[in-house]
Image 1: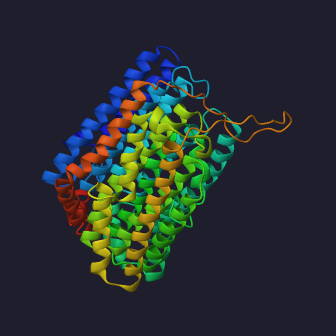
Image 2: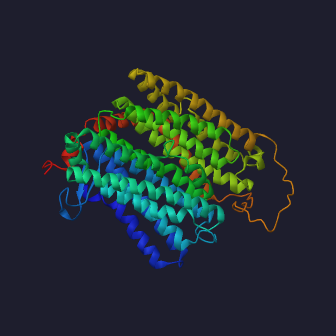
Image 3: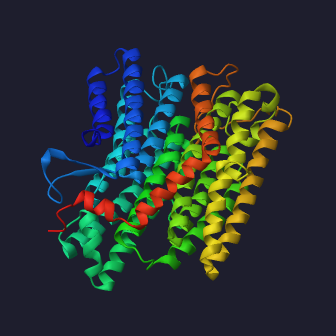
Length: 517
């Protein structure tokens, strides 16, 4: 099974190369390769999760070189869990994209660009989760980001280029900070391997260790969209096509959260920056949800809710207990699925109603009841309505905060409850405007031919939606409900994951059984 660890990275890379050679020819083969490879990655990820849960971390040393000289990939419970959910998301979003016809005949997203770029993104995500050293984690981030640069600007419209420029600048700055932090740690310890760093960082002077920790958290915080490092996100994501926005919102920010979890549990245990993380979690919750409440564009509203719910995850990491980490891992898995599902539904709404602006929509509960159901279920889940998985995750975090008993932790507990209620209010507002009220009659508007619009062209309304789009969205909504139905076993699994994170001996001994050289 150890030999299968690199496959989630290698298979998409190999398929991307084949697709580049094929070019725009044989679109049916292009689609078949994409779906087959992503389905295979999902199957491998499930097998890795089962094996890691039964036998402990799985280690693959590429080329037979041991750490820290060679590249070592590791699948423990956390990385395997993240890999399973991310593989399910990338597969469903690819099917959705094929159904939307964005890859075959869409002039803004040509087949020869979208498919290989999307597979490159999937490979970068897998590499980031499986990396056992900081530099390979950086490489995974960069593979993913290079693909995201293409996807977020695909089509070359003014709005996408403007948003993509901001996204690229912020990403490059955070990557530079990440690389500087890696250089500092390498200069101070002589290694970038996570298992070796776990033992050597404790021997560093406090100032150097704290500086490296803050630089890593800043880099991860930008990628995770933690306030105040999140201001780029609401302007960047909504301009991209619905499948791109969905996979970005569902996955890319969670890779930053994954980095924060690894840093705070493996490299810098002890809560040296606990107060900083708690304050960042508080501001992320409140600023994000307040921003969501005043939005009239559905995608921007969902982008602000994304920022606010990142605060829940940072809250759990800051608490640092086994119970808090278990609830955090559960909430990360839940949020990846829910956020992806909501953005896929927003694409259905935009295609059915011709706009993502809530001021121009109405009456979809009568004209498109299935879309109403597909929106209502994940919306209530995100709002934390019991007994859904959003409620289970939040309840676990609130319980961990109350058990902690610290003044700031209790303030976060209250803020988490308020944020959940305000999230529910914002989503109910969407329901009332988009689905419940009477259809909006568009008014003719005068246009100035000399004034160039900064917005993307309106989507032509479609009465009949492609089955692949609806089916992929339905699968994501069903997966979110599966977290509720299988909540007991999943909570037990995240509990074992949290215990492994809190006591990382199994991870470090698997990666470097010979000890730090």
